[in-house]
Length: 565
Image 1 (cartoon, helix red, strand yellow):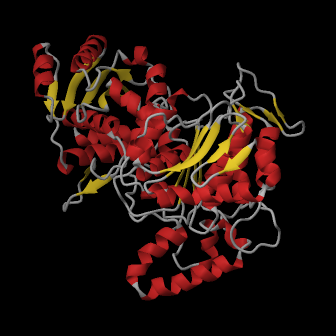
Image 2: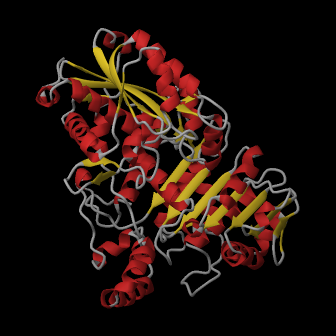
Image 3: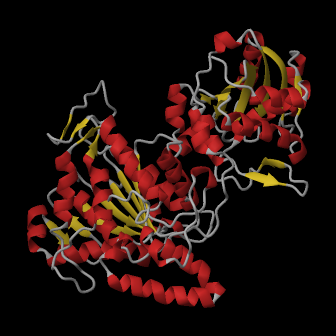
């Protein structure tokens, strides 16, 4: 899949390839011997060539069930091979798959439903365990049957497959008698039935789900399975409140290295959108040379190119068709908010934050209590020798940790265990824990002032004022935030920021979207942000109150100063 000039593959596939190569190094894989030298002590997982090869061999023994082809059996395209090798090759030290969730996003007519069927059928036959429940799930029965019917037809056509694994296809299920397993389609209504205990789930066209209900039920029901797998295959869709926007955003964060999620595989074929901070130009919707980035099978299926050309002619002539063309043929989202932070520059500011050393210097704080059911943030900043240092404490209720864990995206549980998040309260955040943390920080550090958002903060502010904590309300508008955003941007772009590679702050930074008022003042936009930004808001408020004490020109001079050794 070589693509040095980025002509065949878009940004997200190139990042997926970089991740694969980096993960081979993490697994200490020996390319000559075809084995991992990893042990429990020196690598988080292994790579096993046989486990990567076996599903490919299985899939290429399956027959075509639709269309006319040169060969009776499937010949896998390299885009599918890359996905399957990643998915099954990386193993935990107990022999289970490393990846429990996998996303394959691609434009329509690139065999994604077949890929989902083939992967689920392999799992059903070759890693089933006892009593497996393999499920093709969708919001409607007809959509769920697309993946199921492909698998069912393949089983019907291959007698050796039925005999080897004691399979029997029925109208609404495939039975595997040897292990007491079933492979069946379900829709949202059927998912509420008792006894659901899925081992492997395929959810085709995840973008079409208008809410999280089906996914939440399946995730919760699969909790007892040791080697569970959720496969999402999809083409882009119109914006809705369902899980796709969250999954897509998380996948891109994983590929960019913002969030480390060893359980989550993402392969995302799409044309490139402009990203000035990454030096990426936008691909033209009607540039035929770029279509292959979203349509990898185009190079082996000339009919696909003809179909896309026909739709491109209509999209040019009829604006109403253009949006559909972008979504279905170019795999571009219908609407997306651009991020404010240059993540390459931001991640480079990973200098250590030595709290004991910083105790001798004055500091300023920011307190964001915007969410009682998810993230609450308290953060301090120091400026010493030309560097802006920051450290934060983030609080979440137990229900948020459980919810995030069930959805399998943002790793709240891992962050709690690592000490990056503080679990406080059951359903809502316990503000007594927040108060205790602030009082401890006041006793430990030379806090000059803490800025806070007045929303939902009255009772806690009164308690803190009674303890003589210096507090200042931070008005939530562009006029207040703009100087702080300018200062922070200048600091991190110039390398004059040290955040210690804080994963929660990195995540919030990647989510931050800015709004601009008529006077060109910028402020964080929580409504348009794809995920939580509370930790960045607390950081900006801390910088903002620092600016009210220090003259603006002095702050600018400090931020522009070279980093001291």
